[in-house]
Image (cartoon, rainbow, N blue to C red; front, side):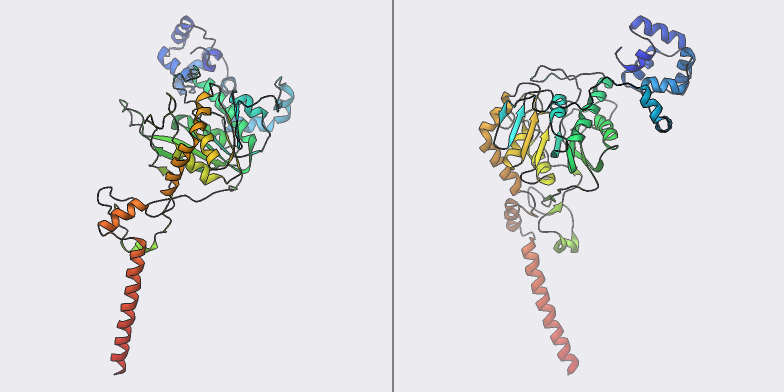
Length: 413
């Protein structure tokens, strides 16, 4: 708590100092903790009390906290040279560590490194990757197989998030795609970083109900999947389509398409930006680790949609290795890192035929208006199919032609 920037600026190092400061400025201890822990800039009246106690201006206070609004950024940009001369960075900006790391596992197409993602990102060639998918830790105080607890302060987590995102942006080719899977809370901050460098293509909501209802809040039922591209348009976008939604019991239409049934694309409905067909991995037949595991159909969709065979896919947070196994099966080159043990990822490649069949099943149920199973139940219960519509349309044209001939004969006579 005392490592966050606000308390540092206020010289609050322990609970006694916090209580004393709260008493001086007449701001409740709980409210000061809220500003500090959530990295929230103090509200108007509280701000004035703090400024008065510190005897500094709002501008100096904002600069001390690293709060840079558009007014401050304009001032900085107008004094760029002077500020650059003042700031002397000791960091080794972008120093490459290429060739420093060796993979712990390789395939014909991929390389897996047992390294911290930030270190690996800095070692890879710039603008060498076609597609990046990242599923970072969610900062939920969970202990993973690596025995690493991902609970950081909000400031620490956001600083780390900015560092790995900016590193990934440098790796991405122009026209490449960047997907980030996270809670909506954290992806609002990720989007703020990405918006300065890349082009938002979609904010995708993935309807997965993991959580139990939370008191005094809406029921959290979706994850956020950011989809950005580097440049004006993607190098690759393979249109994904879904089958029609039908009644599981009788096979009938759920929506009334009226006279537009014959206008529907026979390859299915265009994929929307709300995905309702991604299920959490809970069954032990598919789950390979104790922590949450990404569904194969999520990665199959992303990789199929945003890359082609031979393209390079990078995932900096290996987890259970779903990105890597799907990339391998779809014949993409892949690079990955995992800071924890890699045994479970490597073991999944022993079962690659099982995953290959999974993907075959997934692909048989997309880019069609009706799957084979759907067709069977619809035929059984007398529901329309594209071919029956065509037959009906053809019969209607014949009937109309005969009718027109009768009308012409009648008119002549």
